[in-house]
Image: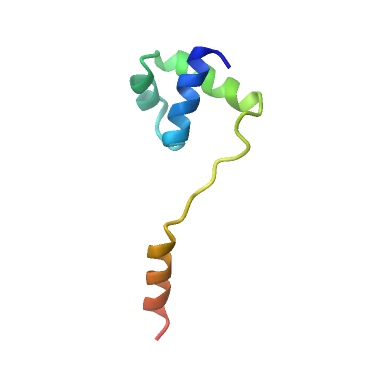
Length: 68
């Protein structure tokens, strides 16, 4: 990975759902450059998948509320 890809990769680690425009602003890269490196990261298989991380404390509380 080059320096620009590393910047985009780190932004994806923080918030993989962030818009490209926000990632561009945070990295100091143009939107088109950010998108280019975003696609390159995906094409090279550096990201296995995008997944959610549940907040189990809230999920368990919500489940308890429905069980009565």
